[in-house]
Length: 178
Image (cartoon, rainbow, N blue to C red; front, top):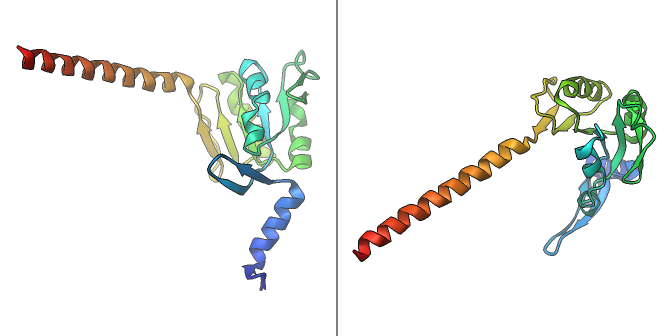
């Protein structure tokens, strides 16, 4: 039941993670740890997809894109971030060969749902969605939506709030000095 005081199930999962290449040693100035990091696929290799494919922060945290896919024949075959862009139709082979569980969607809004459907169909269970649309996925599939406009609105709100508070404080000081 146990190996080295650890349950066999935990040892088995660790061995599977090593076999799949999912273990990554991650270290920061304050912490060093080992984590499970499954490979992911980026769909939609426009400006944002290019930027994410070239983002060095992934490797620093142990993440690695397994593949880049796009449905634009002009982009297919192009090398970006050390990977060749493949057609979206290759997604089943990519998912099988790389045990992909995470997908990143960087497509225009009209294409996002069909890309999400294709990802779910091949076994992707978590999606990071940069497309400006809400995705409908089956139960058990996690979606994180990144809306940069909303993030800017939040920052704008905080800036306006800080300015209003500074104005109120300034009026209080002025009336206290009078």
